[in-house]
View (cartoon, rainbow, N blue to C red):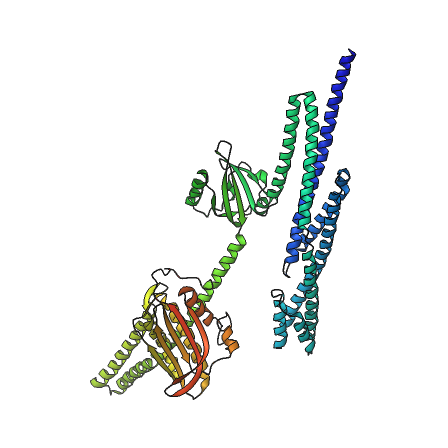
Length: 639
């Protein structure tokens, strides 16, 4: 009996010891895993600090940086409060951690100072942006541009800029404020770069890697020791208890990994949706819930059709279903809506998830919100349309001016003849010959007006269609649009073409628009020459690959500074009421984007009829006819 009690007591002690060890070891394991989470979070925070330190000056999310600093301090405090190193025999781990913590604290101090400098620099830059609008002195604008470039060009000499600032004497309060803020920027920029250099050397990735490796090795040893204890106790009790405890250990480890994965998915910026094989929703992450306005409880067991905006055709979804149900990954875009009915554009990838038998069990959709990108693209297309319409108004203006010029004399003759008929009729002096002469004059001039309309209609028969056209004919059409102005300004127009059969493929009206823009610029410049001879020379030639169109004038040329900016949008040397600065920009886009060619301007000297002249030469190079030319109009402003 005593031996029975002794055995029972022995087993009771074993069971109690087993329970105690399991509980204690479980607590230790949890502490070690919590510690591992803190270290993993420190790695993420350190990477974020490195990104911030390596980034250029600009707008930053101060709340995010402050949050990262708070998280870093929280993790360090938690690790220190846990006193986990007191239970570790290897004292080097504590030394390594203290070294890492000290480096991280130094980096946080640098980040704090960088954040402060960034705020000061942004404030001063914004002030200078407002102040420079009130300063007309080009020296200040030049310095302002160089200061702004400091953020993009690390090789820019700050000492040179500082010297320039010291050499300038302000003449008003705006100039004075500009110099004050500029000096602050240079000072803070220098300190900012120095802080970045200090921060960049505070890299402790290797120390973290070494620490994680050593800590992982220690953790493995700890787990192995626990495992051996449990195995010893389980062998004394039973194989079944051993299996149960081993299974519990595996479950614990899996749950921790699952928890980490779930946290990563739930906090991802991408939308994550999980459905069963019938496409009924089982899970959506926080980002999906936040943007759509639906909670998980509202969409669970419903299909993703609850998000559909009803814009995408059914065939699109049919092809998607065919792909994913065949076991393939599908990538595409959705047009959905949130709970309030607002449109959301999404770029999505849907992958089937298979069970152990190789059958589809679930579907995983990872989606990215591209609504802002779509809105920006729409805005660019609208801007392109406005620019195109504006360019077409230039051609329409030339047509109307040319028609008005060519109609003025015939209409005057018709009016005079009609008045003559009435006067002679009233005084009884209208005889048959006079009636016939005046009627013929009215008829002939009316036919001339009709023929003029037909001529101008023929200019734009092709509309916006891609056609094959003769380039000489295109220049002839351009000439007719500006002929009246050439005559009024007494400009001599000299045209030479080596080969009358040169053809191109594209939208002829757009090329005519380019010619008219260039010729108008030459005429504007020649108008200021007074009584001196005015020339426009056009020469067309080709080789095996390209056609070359040279248009030059004798308007004395322009400055190199103007030539370098001539193709920029909204740049003009004319008064605001005379030009928009878009003509040559659009011409450049048409030649480069639609005709895949090149256009350039340069000052040149030339001789004509034994006299020397100076002016600007425009060279247009266009590849000869290509059968693979796109049959649609390219978008202006894109490359």
